[in-house]
Image 1 (spheres, rainbow, N blue to C red):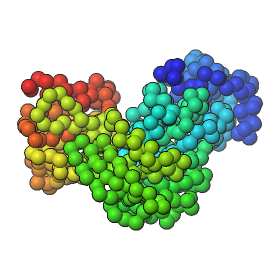
Image 2: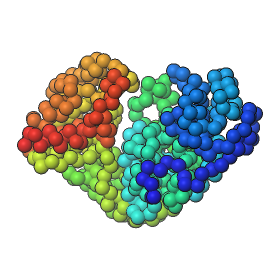
Image 3: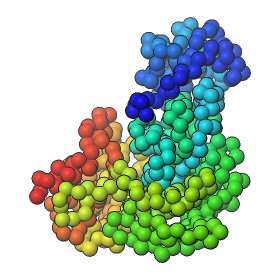
Image 4: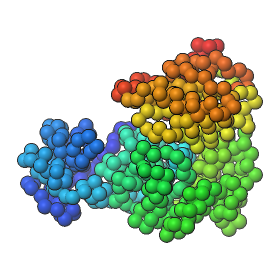
Length: 497
């Protein structure tokens, strides 16, 4: 790419406000030329249509003056927002503007997703790893990744903030991908994005279901609502083909619910179109044989530990083969993967023990990581773990229990307390940890907790620092302090040697 941080296309769209209003079937007050769309005043560029939506704390119309000062030429909002906007800028008024935004954004940028293959990946855990393995599987082909760690186009980062960006940003990124001749985009699709319609306005060529466990119950009412949000991806309005993990009970249910053509995969001996057999784990990953349709058999080496990463890799082979790629070539690309930031990421600083940083921040993920590392750990398994503030309270003791059930030593510390009292979060994790056989220790400061784990580790042990993965900051009372688990591990290992 010519510009590593470019998030909008070089060729700027140009619409008049009446033209945009016509696509929405809405009335408009005033006229303007629109060359971009933005939801956040911090992202407004000259010529933008500012989309003022109702929010949890304030209506976006409250900030119309800031949008105008940043160069916005018009506003799209609802009737309540129109009262706030007044005559500051020309305005299109519609009911439920968020619901209309994705289709508008796709039209504005000329439906760029039709120019390449799109693979949408959903699940409670493994989405990021699966998108990165998809990128690796394609080798030298020009691909893109959209997700938790950010957006990569042709392996070059482009700025994005949400796991699934808001529709205007997403369609702008798709437009950049079209300019860069991307062949395939592998994209994480969160339940929040599905509920809010961020991934509407186009149809995925392939939708992938990895698994479903407890998460986001601060947003969804219960697990059933969470599942139904995920399942909404597997409808003709959103996808053309489904790839489903039938090792997961929710995956088996989804296979029965979806009206889409379905390809199934399994690493656990269940009948499926794609199966992993002769699985041979080792310290650096897993070797296995993949059995596919029509008697296909190929060898696959996954350079990440854990059977869950075998499942992620098998999902990639199934999905990209369904999209028309050669599975033998895909296997070669996966084998050459250099890993995923903050996902079972090894930290090497000359220490005699194994050190791993992982993003595991929910009970199922903690269990998956520790059970993957237990068979390849000769000594003690030591985990540093906490839980995030302002999120699902119910999972905290479950995370502690999972850690103490599978690790020998659990060092309970702070994750991202956010606005909550950190001690109360640790207490909930410790409550769960008390139920397991592992020894639980409380060390409040995260750096001190990692130092404690490093100090007790010896030859043959494994230290896992869980929860934050690729993140480079720790949020406390609304302030994000620089903190990267990987960098801190390297520093503390060096200090201890």
